[in-house]
Length: 125
Image 1 (tube, rainbow, N blue to C red):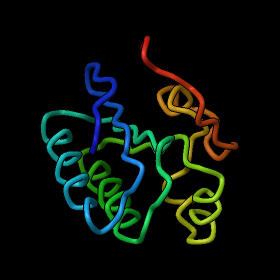
Image 2 (tube, rainbow, N blue to C red; image 1 turned 90 degrees about the vertical axis):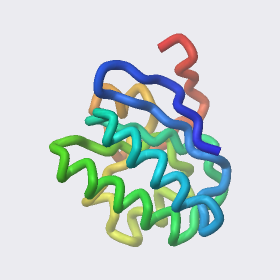
Image 3 (cartoon, rainbow, N blue to C red; image 1 turned 30 degrees about the horizontal axis):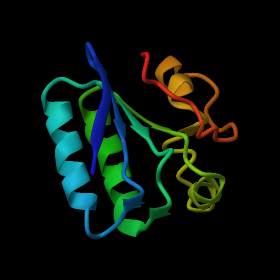
């Protein structure tokens, strides 16, 4: 399901599962909300494994962004496939929550909106 990959100070990176849909979106949202309540101010969602994202998944991502905004935090979406980046733009969500090409770029807070590079590994971070 949802894997916490990196946790340092008030920043957490979680890897989303290959499918984010009606079956698991509420569980993903609840787990991320727990991280926020535990003090996570910058939450990076690593979407490099996501192959299917439905409206429930999109809704939970938008809700998490709002929750972090209300805690003076930031949600960063990283490594979303080209297909879902296009969907993101069509829905107009790129103005609300830009997509970073890699997890590292999301951690640095630079290069949002560039082409996704899903091959990056953060095992050493």
